[in-house]
Image 1 (tube, rainbow, N blue to C red):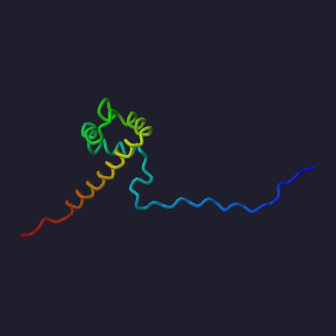
Image 2 (cartoon, rainbow, N blue to C red; image 1 turned 180 degrees about the vertical axis):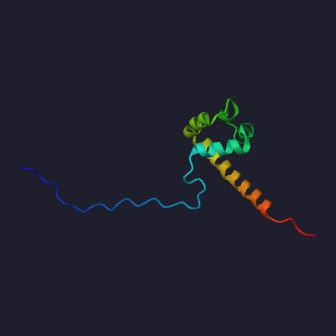
Image 3 (tube, rainbow, N blue to C red; image 1 turned 120 degrees about the vertical axis):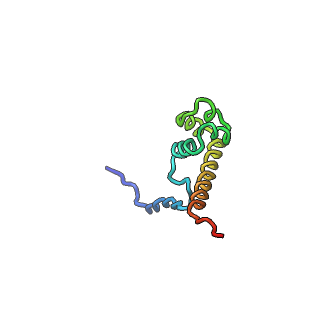
Length: 103
């Protein structure tokens, strides 16, 4: 004799995560962020802006990722610097696109 579980209401599907079209960090990996910062600022300047050892002593993307994944406060600083870098780049592009003032 087999027992069947009573048929109950089916739970609703989990709501889909909302899209984040205005979040510039959405979809970016930490590796992409660190690589972009190192390319833009260089390791020496990056270690001045975010004073952590993995940027100052024998810096590499790999060692930085290990540290940043374990250290939330440092990751927040790096993400914040990345957002600042994006704003700087946008300003530079806008300045290049504007025609010089005519006298």
